[in-house]
Image 1 (cartoon, rainbow, N blue to C red):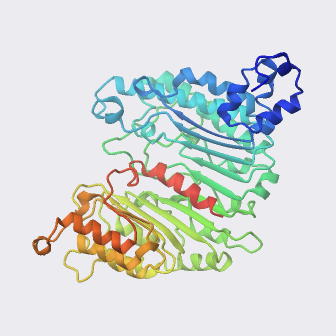
Image 2 (image 1 turned 90 degrees about the vertical axis):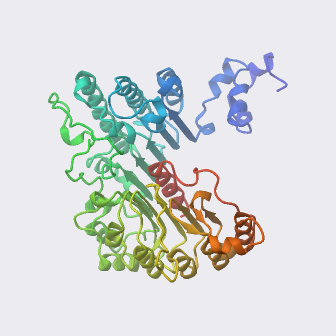
Length: 515
C-alpha cells in the first residue's frame, strides 16, 4: 500500500480505513493492520468480522492449540465476541483414539494416558468457557454452531477416583458452562441457527427453555446432539462419578455410561415455542411419538429437514414414532426429507424405526454387525422414490457377502429401484465385480459418487479366466463406461468415515443448509 509507514496512514479517517479493509482478505487485513496503531484499532471493526470459523485442536504429544493458544483465543473473542453475527467453533481436544494418539495400548494400564487426557479435558473446558463468556451479552448473534470431538474423553472416564479433586474442579467448570450457555440463549435476540453437538455437559433440559422469546420465534434450525446414547468405545467401561460437594448437581453432569435413559434435551412443549423451525437434528433417543406429533401441529412452518442419529438399541426412545405419526408429519410437511445414521446398530434396530411413510433421503448404516439382506430389501422397496444417498459400512473385518445364496444381489436391486440414488458408499462388505458393473450401468451418470475400496471387491475366478485382460483393469473400464466418467476403487478411507459422529454432524449441517 502506498501509505504504509507514512504520515498519511495516520491521518486517514477511520471510516476510510475500514472501507479499505473491507476489500482485503483476512490475511491481508492482518498485514495491513501493521501499518500503525490507528490501523490496528480499526482492524476489529464490527462490520469487518460478521462471521467466524474456528477450529481448536488439542495438546496430545505437544501438538495442537493447547493452553498456550488459549490467550490468543481470549484475545480474538474479546475483540469480536460481543458483536459477531455468525460463529462456528470446533473443539477437538483429542484427535484419534488413545492407541493412535499416545502410542500406547488403550488398556488403561499406562499411567500417562489419564494424565494426558486430563490435560486435554482441562484445555477444552477453558476454551469453551472463553467462548461463552464472550458471547453471553451478544444480541447480534444469528448463527451459533459448536461441535466438540470429546467422545474419547467421555469414553476414557475422565472423572475417575484418582483425580477426585481435579474432577470436582472440572465439574464446577461444566456447571459454569451450562449457566453461560443459558445466558447466551437468554440474551440473544436474532438467533436463527443453533447447533450444539457433542459438547460435554453443555446442553441440559433447562437450556432451550432459557432461549429468549424473540429468538424462539425466529429460530429456523436446531441441532442438539449429546451422544449419550451412542455405544462406548470398544474396550472402555468408564467408572461412575464419585459424589462431590453440594454445588454440583448430578443430573447436570455428563453421562458416564450408565444404563439410565438420558434426559430429553428437547421436549414437545419446547417445540411449541419454535413455530418457524425448518430443520432439526437430534439423537433418535430424544425423538418420540409426542415430538413427531408436536411437529405436525397446525399453525407452524413446515419442517423441511430432519436428521436423526441412532446409537444401537439403547438409542431407541421408549415411544418411537409410529406409521400414523410419520403420516401426519408428512401431511403437514410435504417437502420433508430425513437423514438417518444408524451407528453400531443391528438390522433389527433399523427395522423398528423404518416406517413406510418416513421420507428417507439419506441412510448411513455403520456397525460391527453386518446389515441383513432383508433390511436392504425393505429399504429399496419402501424408499425407492426418496432415497438419494446410501452408505453401508461394516468394521468387523469379515467382509460379509449380502448376495450369498440369493438370485439377485440386494445392492443391485437397490440401485435398480431407487431411481434418485446419487451416492453409494460400500466398505467392509464383499462386492462382486459383476454386481458393481451392474450398479454402474443401472444408475449411470446420475450416480455421482460410487466409493468402494479395492479390498471389498471380489472377482469371480471363472469369469477371470475368460477375460483377456487383468480382471481389475476390466472392472475399472466397465464401471467407468457405465458411469460415463473415469472411475477407480477408493484408495483411502477419508470418504469411508473414520469418525462417524463427526461425519454425521457435518453432513447434517450441510443437509440443513440446503433449505
